[in-house]
Length: 277
Image (tube, rainbow, N blue to C red; front, side, top):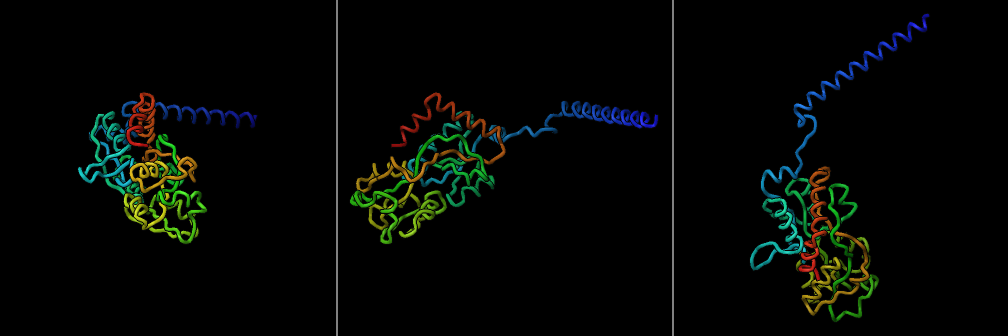
């Protein structure tokens, strides 16, 4: 009988506990149904952008054909600048371009200086540790830009990595990271402005620029003194995407859906054909 008595007490305690939880859940549900915002933070960066009426786009302005400042107009131009303008238009807001640099890109994003970064940004695992990437929109790889006169001189990375060779790089980006990881013998010369380096190659101040295959093709097309070997057999394989603060899946999902729509309707292809050789 004693054991039956203990079992009875346990059952009664369980019923009381379950009843209390059920009552609490009902009260919680009733309370949150009155004010759902107090339970879940509903606002996303997307909502804030729509409320403010503009989207802030971080861009370096030094990387053709994706983002650069036209010296004649002082305005940003390029593939991703046009994409940013299209993005703002489809959101029904204005676009505000915010100047950033490759060394400060991530810090500026994390400091909330802009809502999204656009401008030939390589999707990397390292960057993805701190921020969120959109879907990829372009495949490419690292390749050299050299002088036409040296067309038969540099046919591999081993040909380039020689003590008498000077390689020009811009600081803070994936170009410099690749060069410092793979070049052991050649001289590395750092230039603050990425747009200057192709001219330095053409003039002979440096011999090689290691850059993205898309940029190498563009400069070889623009300047007959330059040549773009290995753009079809790149040293690496990468993709470009747009960079956003992580954790806001509402905003990220909208951006990805927008990119899918741009592809489906052929808008992305039109912009790519216009800007990329």
